[in-house]
Image 1: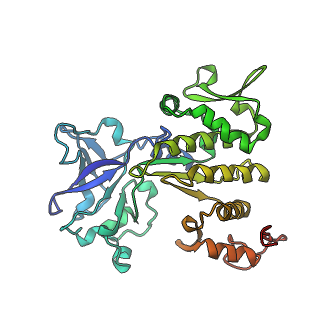
Image 2: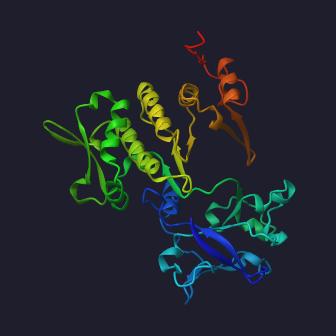
Length: 379
């Protein structure tokens, strides 16, 4: 996140401490650009209703928002407490930034019409977290807009805001590392390539005799990629199966993150569908290595999956490694445009497995197969 001030003459005071997006995530990838690509949108928001002022603020005017609503016009500016080192906005930011995040400020309250009704209903308070306001219309799924707040997607977060965020999905597995990320990781005192090999061979023991190299992508492409070198030469990791390159790039990314975080700088690793392309045996080993990498680190790993194998394997390894206290499973269901969420801890999940239940279903299972969780230690 990037510190800034949210400036609006309607507020008292008119400048409020806030955050907005850094253009790049931990892996050197552009967050909003990736989201647009994933959902078939143009890479850039060419119609973004923003401009850069003479003093480097990002000025936003939202023409569709009612005239009398305070968020129709506002600015994002360098924070007021950083004279002499103001990181101003540029023309590039216009197409890359479309949200801000309000931060708690002791002694001041946000005007009521900036608070979504559902926040008021459930007594969600800014002093307990952070509120994000997204104004890019493409991502605001509200068809009937009667109030100004309806033109924004707004959500609240609690806890410690991560310093470093990495998002890994199947697109990331298919891409080369950005040169920015690869050059930085190779120049660190911890030996990135040796660490990648040490964990990779635990997932694929057949690669024990090969060494890991990170070098320029072939054919003059942008970025760098992984190579495995044996006695007769080296092969691109991308020439191996999809499972091998998926595991390679997940491990390379998470190793770098685990070496970077500390007690004051936390990491968030967002991992979508770890089971993709993976044989169950390799998936089992990969998940175990991921837990080893993060067990004693200031990293939260958030996994999105529809695989019962992934959940069962994680649960088993978490038990063996005594990580139960930090384990949570969220079951999601979308009905009539409303998202329902149920949260379970380790004991809840284990009870489901021992009862032969499938966590992916809210109702009776309509499949010709069933699952049985076996715990060898108890057997």
